[in-house]
Image (cartoon, one colour):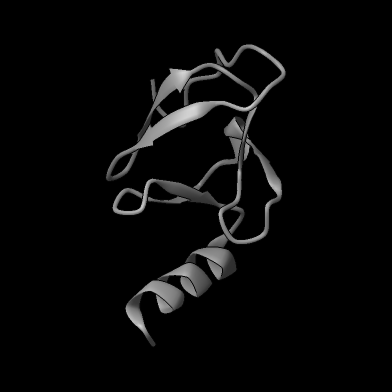
Length: 73
């Protein structure tokens, strides 16, 4: 399964494995939580994540902030 698949089930938190360019659903659900803001991100809107840190981000600003936080810049 990847970001373009639309067969998401359940109304709860999904558990994903984030890869380079796609993700695998380990536990079905409708959303994940942004590691920076705590905002719920519907799986169909998920575009930003870190394969290295295995976490999701609401958008590019949050992804950049997390990168800066973890890389000391």
